[in-house]
Image (cartoon, rainbow, N blue to C red):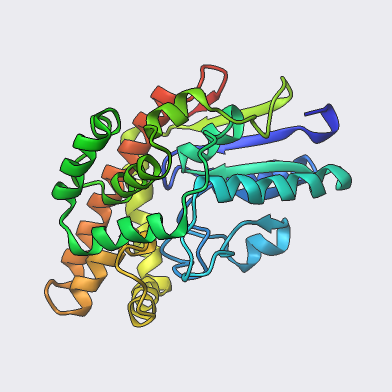
Length: 294
C-alpha cells in the first residue's frame, strides 16, 4: 500500500488492551477501526465479546462489528471480502485502516493471502453438516482419516467445525484442504513496508488480573441477560457463537445446574486458557517484524 494508505495492525490475546490502543492510534493517524475478531462480527453478545460501546463508536468510525446475521455462518474468506470493500473506500477517503482483534487467522490472511479453495456445492456442504448433526465427531474424524489422512493428522478428533470443512472440501475437489492452503495461495490485501504491526503480550499475572476485572464488569453490565436472549433466539447448535466463552457456563447457571459464582469462575478459567492459546499462536505464527509490547 502507498504511504497515504498505510495500515496499522494490533493483535493480542483477549483483555490485553487492544481496543484502547486502536482508539488512540486511530485518532492520532486519521484512521478508522476494522474488527479482526471472529466473535465480534455477530449482533448479539456485545458485552460478552467486548464489542466497542457507544462512546467508542462516537469517537472513531468502526467497521465489521455486529454485521453478520445469526442466520448465517462467517468465515475468513468472507471477512477478507468485506475488508477488501472497506479498503477500496478508505483509500478514496485518505483514512488509515486500523485492524484490531484476537483472531490470528484474520491477520495471517490479510498479510499472506487466503488459500483459494473452489466453491463447495450447497448439496455437499449440507450433506456433511447433516452428518455432523447425526454422527459423533470422533466418527467424522475417522471418516476424514480414511479420505484425507493429511488433513486428519492436523486436526483434533473433537474439532467438529474444521473436520466438516475438510470433508466437504475433499468431497468437492478430490484434493486435501492442506494442499489448497499450501499451494493455491491468493494475493494478500496488504503488502509493502508501510504497515505498522503491534503485538500486545502483557505479563501473565497482569493479563490474568485484567481478565478477572473485565469479566466482573461484564456481569455487572448484563452479560447474563445477553446469554439468556441468545438461548431464546434458538440459534442452530453448530453455530460458533454458542461456543463463545460465557455462553455454555451461563447456560448451566440459567438451568440451575451450577451457582453464579461457579459459572463466573469457570468463565474466568476458560478465558485465561483461551488467552494462553492466543499468545502461543501469535508468538509462533506472526513474523518477527511485529513490535511486541507488554
